[in-house]
Image (cartoon, rainbow, N blue to C red; front, side):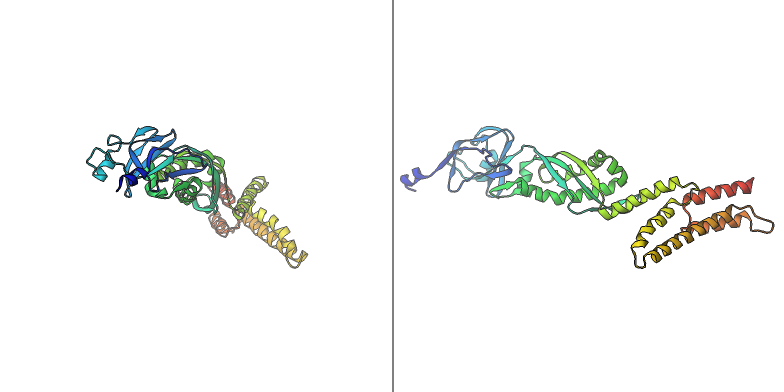
Length: 336
């Protein structure tokens, strides 16, 4: 190379990143045909880290501060390049800056319901929403697993990858916790604690630290919420029933009246629904009356009436509470 060509060659004396674009988490210094001058300064600001990559391999990682680039500060890079002249020649290497600031106020939500097992409702689909914050904790892992050699990597790109990871981790955490949905909905802090630990472990594999995680709402899809509301209403009506017969059955009969009126046949459909409801009620009443009436001479003993009472329970004509209370009274009569 001629002397003229040599002096035209451009050298970099200071490497730094001003973070002038909001939402950028990783940024590659634009080297092009430049080379880093021996003794150049690397300026890493607070809430930043820098990574030197040489021929596809991570050579060194620098934290906040001003670093003079020499064999003393780049021993690994010196080894990779096999330089034997005390690093006197200019060198070229890719330099990546990473923002380690906490990314606060990030929203998360289940775009599709998560299916989990529940001890009260068997299988349910849950929706949840909340806020979280995170930061790049390990630039080496983040570069290797996420950002790679791109010129820049933004917060939106990171969160697009995190979204699927979050949903999968949440489904596993909620399912393994065995916390009923009603308890989760009543104590969202408990749900957040169940998920945060597993989520932090999953994030760490990608060099990301989970700073905060909270749940602001937990809900069921509309059709499941409607079924839950019906069950709650049935329980309330059952507790108010004076004869303590099955509240759920009574509620179903009452609910069938407006539905039947909407069906073809109008009042005929309404009458059919009322007839069906009355038939169920009569069957229940007759069964309980027969079981409770003292046996006349020659009638079946209490043991057989208990068996019939069990048959009513098995057919769903009476509730478990009805069965238990009537059985207790019959046994009391049996043993005096």
